[in-house]
Every structure is written in C-alpha cells, then in structure tokens.
Image (tube, rainbow, N blue to C red):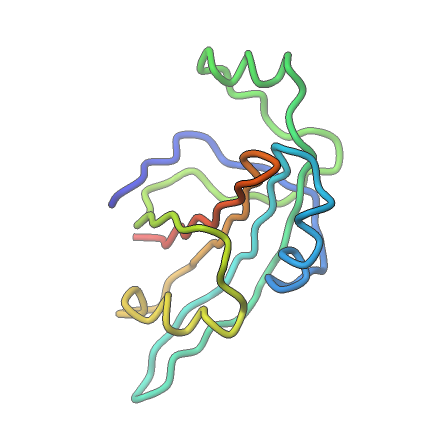
Length: 137
C-alpha cells in the first residue's frame, strides 16, 4: 500500500534500538510514538540494514489532537529536531510482535535498491501497540 505523508512527523532524538523501544512500551502512555530510521541496501546476497536515527515523542494533548484532526500541521514541539520526512512511502502495519532480528525478513522485499526505511511504533491503547513500516519510494 502507498502512503502519502503530507507533513513531516517530528521527534526528540533517542539512542534506543528497536528492541529497546519495544522493551519499555508497556510503561508508556496511550499515544506514545517512536521511530527508528534505517538505510537499506542490497548487494549480491547480502541485505544491509543500518540504524541511522531513533526518536520518541510524548502523546499529543487534547488540544494538539483536535488541531491535527482539523488538518492543521502543528509542527515540531520543543526538542523535536528529527523527523520522518513528508513524502510517498510503501506502507505496512503489523502488530508490535516483531524484534530487531525479524527486520531482515520483513524488509527484504523492499530492498530492491538503496532506500530509507522507518519503523514507527505507536501505542494506540493500553492493550494495542502497532508497528508501521514506511519505506521510501
């Protein structure tokens, strides 16, 4: 599926890995949002997945959520200096049951050429957390 991200998604920098983000997700509030940015490349028989950045952000306030639902770009909040850029992405959403070791299998179909991949982790409710894969076109 294609996703057209109209506005960049902004985050505070983090040093966490995918496994590190997932390990602490149960303690986070509903609306917690994090991502890991990777570079993908494929040469010969080898898939290279290199973590380039990681970010987190606290849930939006009711006021921020209302503005977003009205189509307003609220921009970056204090400390949110990295982002998933606006653009067109291949998109896939799965339950957050995968780990770092699962990434090669999940991202291999998208490694046809060098590209960026973002794995977003979003806590939708106290019981449901999803992983979204955004792979640059």
